[in-house]
Length: 226
Image 1 (cartoon, one colour):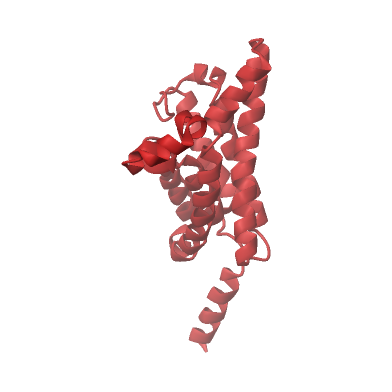
Image 2: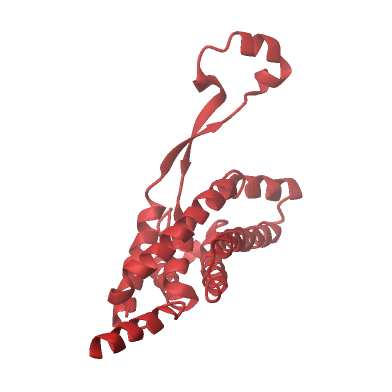
């Protein structure tokens, strides 16, 4: 009888979307803050297609003399911060997930070199700081979407919306900073392409995979977090 009650208790407990914020979840959230730092300084080399101008202006001769795939590709050092944010949100939910992001941002502003170019209060004036603020929006949206009615399509939706929320927040912040500096519209679009450009495509791809990984880890680490 006792075993049946315990099984039923655990079954009911798993019906909750995310573990409560207890000591175990607190420790996991601290660990997740370190994961964001690790992702910040762990570029992943990706080979992407990069067609040179010559291939367009003189395509016949260019492709006739094409001798190596290296001539039409380049290596992109992809920073997997946003997929890690999506994974944390899908694992911890909007509340505890935001706490992990909060720890990361607070330590960075306090002067610890956890951001890509160091840390400190002056970092808030950097053009890319809006993307860091976007971590809050991405975590909240992804976690909120996954708080009810989980299925495969909803996990994909949560990841896509979370990634877009990060980039949208970053772009708005970037645009405002450049407008305050009286930069031209062309400069604004150039910076947007540099910081979001190809990055957003890979963030979407890896973000979706990270969301599924986060759901798996949620089940695996449930006991530790609760």
